[in-house]
Length: 299
Image 1 (cartoon, rainbow, N blue to C red):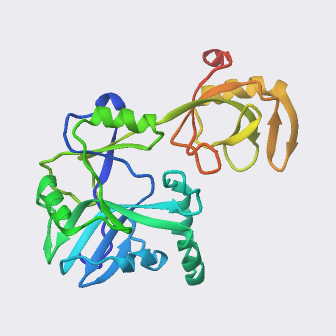
Image 2 (image 1 turned 180 degrees about the vertical axis):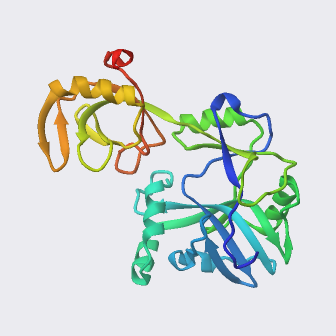
């Protein structure tokens, strides 16, 4: 296991009305999955897809643990150190992706001074030569807490008793959601297990459809009060698309570079994960039209 890419146990998605009564709940961190391998003071890190990212994150070299070997399971999140110091520190998914995609050594050194990586952990898979996979979550949690002390680089994700309350708080703060852990469950690598679940706190907004892509696959360009906020690229059902196309023919303003621009009079409800750092919608999906359009009458 040690120093080899692993396919970790993935989170099973649940709806908010399916939140479990387990008393082992945490916030869902908005970064990317990271597995940290500690081998007698040497540290390597891999993504859940097996990509080694050690050289991209010099922060990992600062990790010192009171053990010989371990595999720690968690997330990589990134804080923007250029933000005003009179505000609470904030981490952004965009910055985590920027750090992940920065590979050249000189660029890595430079960007690490502005965008600081941190690794909140929730599990330990291997400890001092022994796999921990058959241990219960609470046994692994106890071992993790005894090994990792909070630092600038590592922390142990706090647990909360009430999943519903935590979800509502996450939604209020605009966070990604929560994770729930079955306290008695073991680990099954390379599976999506119902013993570890995620409940995402999706957000909703009313947008206007201001453009459509003509070349290269489906896309609707979105605006809010004239301000561009992103693109829906996951197509709704065919009846919705046909209904929209029929009406939008009357709204064409111009065409340019593979896009058709429209009078933005058709509004729709959009589900999205969060706002990006520059105010765009992350992963927007069509929910329904707000402007009356006879979808069901289209044959």
